[in-house]
Image 1 (cartoon, rainbow, N blue to C red):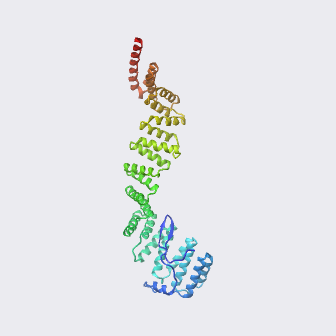
Image 2: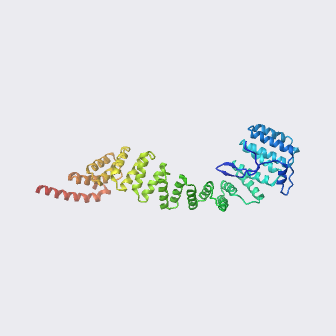
Image 3: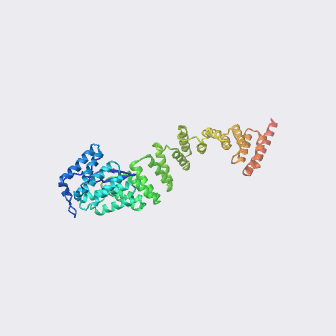
Length: 431
């Protein structure tokens, strides 16, 4: 079992209690007299009682907790003959034995018996109240926790330590009093600053959560900046980038995400997609394409229709049609409609690959379900024209004239092709 101690000053983190004892329970008459500085006279511990309590501790320390409790039960059998200090120390031992056995409800009951005794050292009362606050916090009894802390603070003449301020902050946070939680966190940070120590990571996490609950994104961002600067975990970099985006600081968001990417912190699919979108937003489509292409090749991002389209559009925006083409071909193979065949037709047209543009445009029209049917007829008309197939070109533009979205452009091209066809035929006759 843990060595029995008189106090439990500690920090409660994420629901777990961490004990850092401050003084050993040396149950001697001399210490009892030394601790008796309160207004109430504290009786001395008699040697026979001390011997039995020390024996209980020794047995428990050797691993036989049941036997140690049995010795305490023997002492409790004569409880009426014990003075207040002896009763308090008996219950104190019970409390620590139950704590060592992870029986928190019984530990709380025992420690309550300690402070129920009137004539006990003030130091024991203070440490037990603080212990009860911690144990109640662990049991999620926040009202009781605040009650014990308030009583402890009213009796405590010493300034609060940073960890003690944080315990108050945790209680206030769980009680949804976020403003008071922030005040306590600030006090803890001031104490740490005076000792030339940085704020602990869990303090900043609690501060961030409190600002978040109060809907103060600018302050959340400031806390995230501290977490990145002091503790530099991958998730903090990504969360900071997200907060910059939330408060409209897109340039900082881009810089942080790019730094995180270079450091190897961006590995989750959604984070990779977010980085690619940021690159596109900031006018760097080639970087967006490079990030996506690499992630898909490594299997970090699934080659789904959505992601392939994003990759192809990034290459197109970067004017790298050669790399966009195989991506669009792959996308066209996994869908039944002609959406990506239509995009391929446009890319082939821009790349002056007239025959392939014709094939893709015809396939897009055949598959159907495309957004701008008229554009495919325009692609056909332009491609046939560049292959000097004037009749086919004119037929395509005639079809495009029948569609409102492409009517004006088709008429202009039809007139132009008709004129060029006439000139071509005249030149052919001269030859």
